[in-house]
Image (cartoon, protein in one colour):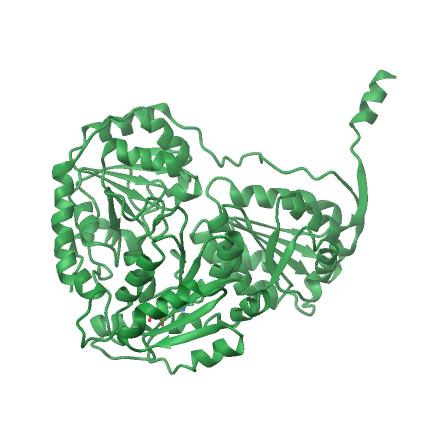
Length: 577
Ligand SMILES: Cc1ncc(C[n+]2csc(CCOP(=O)(O)OP(=O)(O)O)c2C)c(N)n1
């Protein structure tokens, strides 16, 4: 008798509802308050269920599904939560692919839910049928097709767990339309926190920590390289303490930017192709290289066969697949950066490396003289430079904004010259280099951080790749500031044609529309600056305006971005001109 009573007590309450309603409930239970998407036939039951839960979950309709993915990415990067998007089957689903690939390369937690044709029609070339599970396989951390309503909660729980755990990434859940309609009994939703044989958080090795500490404590010329892992693991405090206690100069990848304030005395700047002179050159002079949450992307290493060969390499990394992938690690420290850094902090000695830091200062002075001075303060007869625009934006916003960059010359300039004062303030497409990323990502970032200023920095090429997302600003009045650095060229490609293809400019000239009229059409305040004398005032108007604003600045058409490591060259061959 007693046993029966216990069993019945254990029986969980069940609620009868459609698969679509269950899906929306699962999202609410996962803490989703904002999601981005675009409706269509195969996802209509879900949109119908969203209609019932409007007060709990806000759906932002982007103007293209790619925009939904980038908005979800921007949202995820700033909030630290999983970004969520919705799309219909067929073209809706295939439009997600670029964003999925972007999120995969930049380890952004994202869950995309797609509608699929009814189960019995799968494989019949039905209207708007694509095999999105196969198509997205290579660009997702995990994906699944659900054909029964009862399987939806489990799939969603797993999707969120996989997206946010370990090295985060994008997940796709494809749900057939009949499963969305099907009515079933659902138990109370349970989140997932483990999956057999999936080890997202490797256990720290005491031996690895000891070996790393020994190397760090005896190093004479150590260098820290920090990447996205510092931000993803929320190691703000641990990382800064580690840098300050060890006194080691720290340089960032573009995904690590803003993990340490730009003005921090031990922040020695940007790594890689258009990074700073000193950290690139000194990568090939340091004795111990401490890579924290970064993956030695080729844009960072240049010719990897001539990369830091003299150094002992310590690699703090959560994903075992990254260890020894591009650069051999003498001491791999597998684990979440926050935990590894906290543990290392107890083992490293307090130190200063003044003499070594002087080397950075000397090389910095060379870069200042040859590149920075003129980029930030061009001669009166020279056209406006991207650098001077960013300098004013940085000064006037006091480095407090979230800067969302597109891809190209303006991206490098914004990241080099904006003085990021706050944590998680850089949102960019690092690994995939996706033009069109910034506008929708900035919209997502603003939804994640409504009280922070969000500035999208975009080129005239990339702006036109997702320009339709101005429609979201028009509709929702989301306050995104858009800085359009217009050089009337696909600037970065033009620079390569200039430097490596004998200036044979092939399809890089931009024949642009009137961006001011476009802004007007979308009800967005705007102005265009063509003279340096008007620049500062217009930036004040831009930043102080209540609501979205497009500031278009006409900058030098053929300015090249330096320093630069030409492709195939070594970090020590970085060019100042
Ligand atoms: C979707 C996509 N297509 C092509 C490229 C190659 N690409 C990299 S930078 C660039 C030019 C960008 O021009 P613009 O947006 O005007 O920015 P600028 O370099 O002038 O600052 C191109 C075409 C890319 N990164 N992404």
